[in-house]
Length: 338
Image: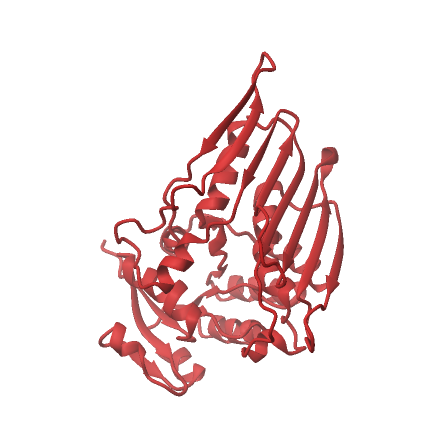
């Protein structure tokens, strides 16, 4: 039996819709982009001829042709729109942060089960080349027993941005829900749910209503200490990943190559997509069984956010376990909401 393509609707066609979702939906052979919500300017048809453009979320949710809804609207609307989509018996892929509270997240997972649908958290940074290199090094065993880990995601944005849902004091705003959710997802996916955590937030930019600095210390069994940092006032970024273990150290700067390429107009499948620039390799220093020190460059394999859409496809069509799990998301949100 030939299964139909997963007909997909996007709730927004701003940056996330145009850059992080639509190109990958279009590129995957088992998906078909059929509709978007564009409240004011209608531009999607220029890139995707024949796509339906709705003025409201309700119009898209009432489209019986759509099987999967991508919720990529402002953070404080994720829960409401995902819930409404599930009640329409549609599968849902929800941008980060999944919701603003762990209670909302649990309710969405229960509602999905009740309606025999899937609600899936979108965490594309698991498919970044830099993060995948960290995972590869950990799995190699060359670091020995991990003891101290630093994950950083830093930018320089001194002035207050124009996106109100990010800069106003509403649920889900602030840097911890933005870049912090990416970092926590990466840590939890690699090391599991922490035993304890301690969090520091700060507001450093003049006139800011939301946190623009986040530090989280997560404690794990066996003495592993993990430190998460993100800030909007870092003009010269430090390494994004530093891992110290009983037998070695791995240092890797953030590459963010896919986002840059997508903003420049490159598409998934184009030659060179997801390939890091030369000189951005990670550095692994380790001791062999004879305590001889080695230093080597770690070259990241090409990466693509197509991986998350393949996971969505496998879950919806073949009922395979989705890599971002309910316990991981609930644990992440408990840390963020504290």
